[in-house]
Length: 83
Image (tube, rainbow, N blue to C red; front, side, top):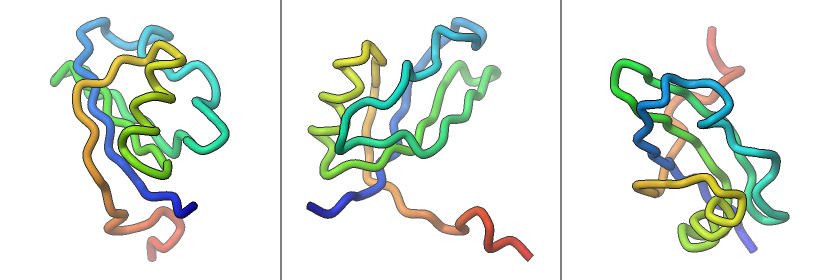
């Protein structure tokens, strides 16, 4: 099965800390790639790899990580290719 990238949004006014961190790997088919917290916007953005949006949503729900929106994503400038 081919993995795709998804942007996951979580609106969170907790101010950061452990409350917004994903507790370990979500599943065998879903992988957390990166997370950024934007405190001034009260949002957490995660880049997640998985077979489809439903699998990503299910895996994140299983570990208790609420999501408000999941959208297909594409790397525009991969880390490591910076000059």
